[in-house]
Length: 112
Image 1 (cartoon, rainbow, N blue to C red):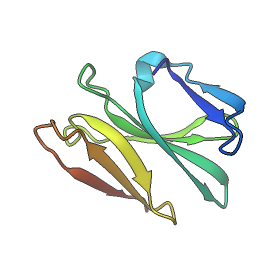
Image 2 (cartoon, rainbow, N blue to C red):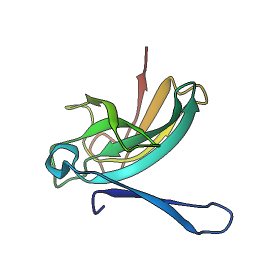
Image 3 (cartoon, rainbow, N blue to C red):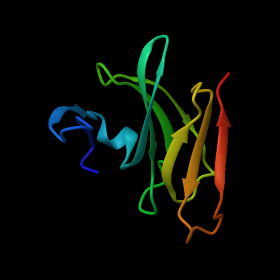
């Protein structure tokens, strides 16, 4: 919500930094994030959407500079995405739908 991702210290709860999403019309409302480390640094995986928008996508964002690295459009598969997680090797992305969604499923996407 509010087109931003706020980062806090998990031990102290202290605010660390904020990543602003500048192109609000493109990315839509952020519903869930997950992070994973790889050889290129830390990547944030973001799922957007909800019932009020047709812009339902998965984004990969560089956690250091907030730059959108890539995204993929999963429509028409995602209806009400509301959670995201990734495998330990960051090759599989799982997106959960709300239980009230007509699809009521967990989607799996594989990165090549």
